[in-house]
Length: 103
Image (tube, rainbow, N blue to C red):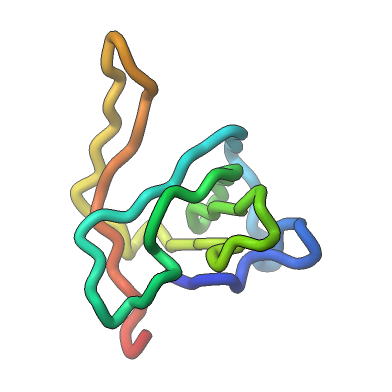
């Protein structure tokens, strides 16, 4: 998991050999059960775009004044993923993200 490391001047930074598999616009990112030590960066709703690459999932914020400009997580640090498609609501993905060791 990395915060504010996957963007540059409003664009997306990819690793060498990494390819975009899918992307979605108009995405809302929220965090539940955030520890106090994580600070204010995770609080509230963040609107932007999500990119799924061959290595990770990356969120880019639409608001350049937001404290969370980008959020990236490698697939190996995700667990308990659930894809929900309710009849009368928006589709969403939920799960648990762990920090990199010593991160």
